Length: 188
Image (cartoon, rainbow, N blue to C red; front, side, top):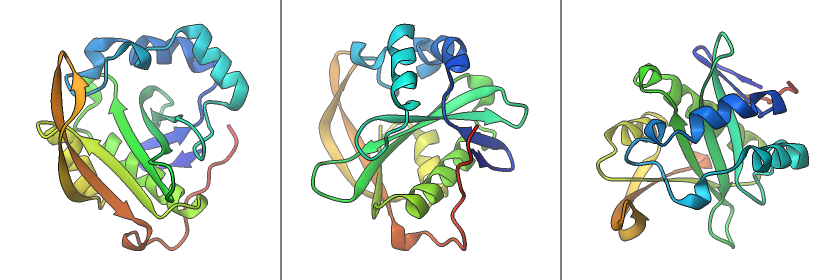
């Protein structure tokens, strides 16, 4: 587990499945910028199978999820990561705070900071990327507060809600992050 001042980050457990499913699969919680394509919606049996396989945690080879809880243990969001394009030491990161009443409180910023520090401290990667819709002011703010740099706008790269959208590419390099000691994930 990663312990912050506002949030804890941990691996998903079977006991989380129903609540996670309720929050994540609710399209209203996703807002206008989170993917809603059918392949992003999983069944409870698919979630259970993945948790049994690897705890939804295999960041070096496939899509992985870490849960974000407040200090009381209430599930409030997730941070996901997966290898970026084949052939270089980079990963893509994404985040969501599920319910609107938990947004704007610093939870997501702290969660991303913790995960980025852990990734650079614990994985053989040099680069982390985030792709953000140009109108998603909150996610751009999170990226900037976490030290990500805007690199480019990728035109018409993302199909969502029946049309193509631009995405802004933000990144952070290992050399841009200063930390004395990376946080450690402890077993649940």
